Image (cartoon, rainbow, N blue to C red):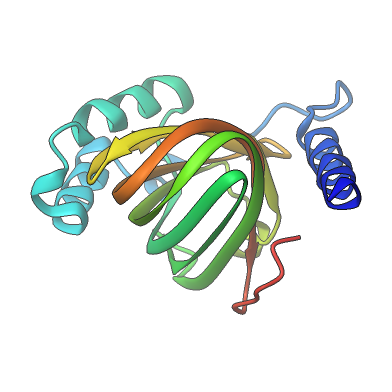
Length: 194
């Protein structure tokens, strides 16, 4: 058990090191307006995707827009996860962009923290500063928190190399807690979360 916790701690430290911005990195270039999705486009897509569960969706999208601007991509998919202090998450979906095409993606990742329960979720991920569709195939780290019983809607932010991914989840299940971890996007499904 100690070896597993030690390995997970080293992995999380490595992921945190990977997402720490470097002073030598140039500032991110903002996508052209014709390459981004407006808040109304995202909101309409979200309402169609989440259905009636999405009462707070407009507030979440406006909060994300005020923090990061307009996304130049988004992912629609589903995922499942669970945790008893150490957790795992697996998902699949499609990355949509305005002018670079659509791309099938899979994601998985570990987490550790005060986190208990399990859930299944419909997931919309807003993607900011994505230079090319293949740039999604990285590890995006961050802190996540969830508190819902049977249903709910939540948002978090994951980042690496000036690319920001904002998962918005509408979950069904029982889950409570906060954790640190990462999500790794891959072109094929895999059981390996590392």
